[in-house]
Image (tube, rainbow, N blue to C red; front, side, top):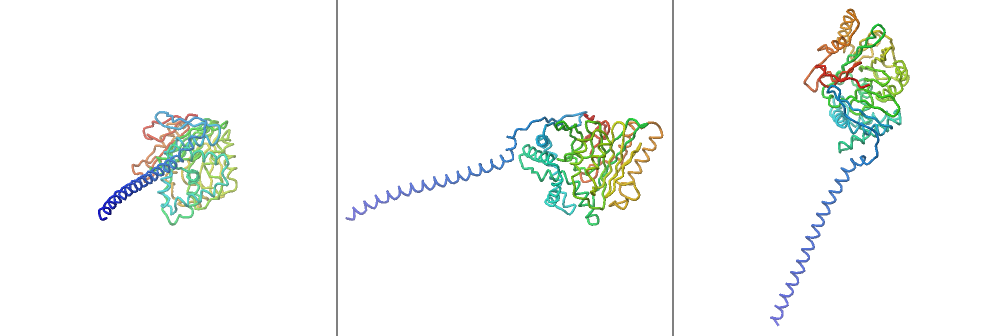
Length: 420
């Protein structure tokens, strides 16, 4: 009996070991399948997340975009029949500048006692004032930039880049003048109508050197509208420094005022509208300032020029002054004595204004004001032309004149020719 029992016990053990072996194999197989499933799920999720940033490339976009050069100075040419396509092609090619400006605003917003999320909240308040076609273009810019970067740039990012100048100079600076140190923006604009005929004009654009990474010149053509060439910061539709195909040119200097501006159409959008619809300098002035209406704008001065006319427009809170001078200098201050009360710092830019006026007066006494005379003044260091290697300091970032543009080699005069 005992032998039989032992035999049965061995058989049972063999059976049990086989069962356990099968179970262990099954468990290992299940575990392997589970690990494989998790791995595959991770791959799928990763592909979905990454693919979501690329999905827009499947959209059919028509138009043309190409980086070009004039005398080694780069500019982007972009053309499309509708606003979305124009935006998409712009974003796809300016993604580096757009990404750079986003990061700069993220990093620098605490300097102004704010945050990127606060900028977004303020930017969204401008949406009701923005034309539908500009919203379409901004959506296109976001999707084009996203496609090139492989990471998401959304509409709000592009909206911020089209409103941050208005927010900074119309909201933050007037509210925070006694609490934070404001980094100065410095520009010098000069224009002369020689014997009342052909104009000679140009300006420097000075800002913190680190912003050079988000600066570009762009020539764009939208449908039947006149082509527009000008300076851009990140994804801004237009900044009021440039020229349209009809020969209307604009120079602008921004002024820090102590009055909060009204909520209204952003500067980038109203500049675009004025450039698109103006046939001459006079119509630009009418369009641009008709759009402003009775709203309190940020403080600035603009010089608007065509082949035969020149207007200088100073804009302070609730005040607009339009002149038709033969020659003029404008920097980042008001020359009107009664407007000094609107300035955050009444002394800021006065030395630069006086220096440019003195130099212009001397040049005008000798003979007709030449292009070389203009360049001599604009390259006068250190007050008018500013150089630095420190990215946190203010420097002359760009040049725009009646003939040339540049964001590289400003001192060497290796400048590009304006393509329109």
